[in-house]
Length: 268
Image (tube, rainbow, N blue to C red; front, side, top):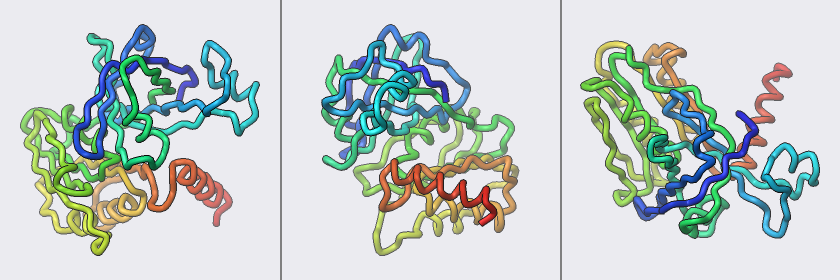
């Protein structure tokens, strides 16, 4: 991901559901934001540490060279829900669970004129226009990427979505030129594997699938295994990513992934 920091200003906010907040930002710096072809464009949002004075212009490389690690800004990874280069606006949807975390509370308090700094974008996925149908599996954290992907599916192509959210109030209206069939699951601690079970129970349409499976790392792993081992889905037809892990914040999840990569490289 590029190191350049894009500095935008909040233009407006909207509470899409009780726990999902949309932030739309713009400003002169958006002209330099790359308009990549990916529907899973992700950015790292930069949150300065309270009380720390940062060099201007704001530059992450300079900050890391000049300041001790404990004064570096925090970053959180989010998918760009929409980027409208003509309007000069970038949209990011935030899951908000009260005072928990960094990004959600920031979005809840955001007002027009507030600064939104971000690094990126990254990304590697867009719906394959040659696929016979598309499977989208995710939770709230993946809804922005899934919503963006649905809008890029060719007209009339089947889209099967299996989505888990906290409850009926968290369901969102998704639009697509394709033929969309959505199964909404409401989270139930007594049935922690209901999303995996729902995918297992699906009757797959004929033809080659393009699958997008993102969200909590546990179900992502299990759905991937099912698709590859039991459904015979080719690995190149899968976009799979664990965004978070139960019981871990993003910093902890990054540490887990780094440890797993190290262990894999060592042959453990």
